[in-house]
Amino acid sequence: MPSPATANGPIGVFDSGIGGLSVLAALKRELPQEQFVYIGDAGHAPYGERDTAHVLQRSQRLADYLCTRHQVKALVLACNTATAAAVARLRARYPSLPIVGIEPALKPAAAQSTSGVVAVMATRSTLASDKFQTLLSAQPPSVRFILQACDGLAAAIEQADLPAIESLSQRYLQALRQHPDGGKHIDTVVLGCTHYALISDTLGSLWGPQVSLIEAGQPVARRTRQVLQAADLLQAVGQGTAHMPPSSGTQCLSTGDPALLDQALRDWQVGEPNLRASALYLP
Ligand code: DGL
Image (tube, rainbow, N blue to C red; front, side):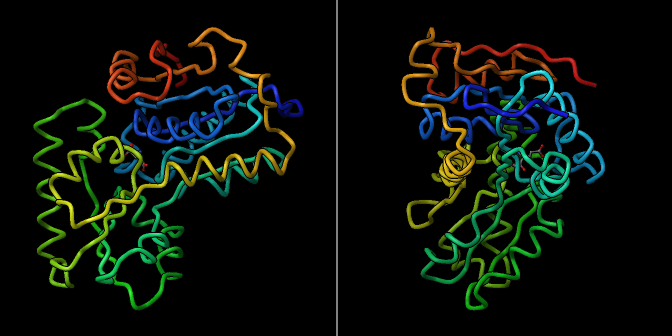
């Protein structure tokens, strides 16, 4: 069992790889005084095309490691696929630990869409999950959601494989636009995988200026602030990174090739220019 959390502890954040950096960046903007331990589970990714048992087992492994080795005071699942598969089980396993998950932003998309046709790009596993189906059934019937499982796209982003990113993005956009259920009227696209938020520029230029892309990094960061506040675990301003050297507020670990996480940290600024990734062996 973990020792009782204190406001001085770090916040644990994990994803199957680099995708969660889009959430980490939002967390660091929202909570600049906090410390973070980020794990990209690239050695066991992609999650989105694996079975639920695998994602559940990895999520528990990462949560246990973050609790026992880093005494995290809260956990952020910066991965839609892991949230769908594991957030309920993690909450049961750690009843006193604040745990924040991420899910595709269907509600904001429904509120924003004027055409009433919304595309959802996510992993196969997220779209097939009970959690997602429940979320979908809670949306207003006046809005039509067209779902697209984007096999291979997270892996291409993870590998920084630009030709594959471009061609898969094109392929899925075309499939959505040509969807018989009103695809040509799509005016809002939900990025339901944290990896896709990292390529929002590419996706934005393919979809064009009439279409809005929605991701959930910022709402997750705000929610994290709320749950920390409610548990009286917010780091007091001036107590955290303000007194530390520039790169000590965040630790980044990869169970795969740390060079890929390193490259991603350079490409996708998370607010600490000198941040470097280290390898983590966690079979
Ligand atoms: N980034 C993860 C998500 O938000 C999934 C990527 C993967 O398939 O591993 O769902």
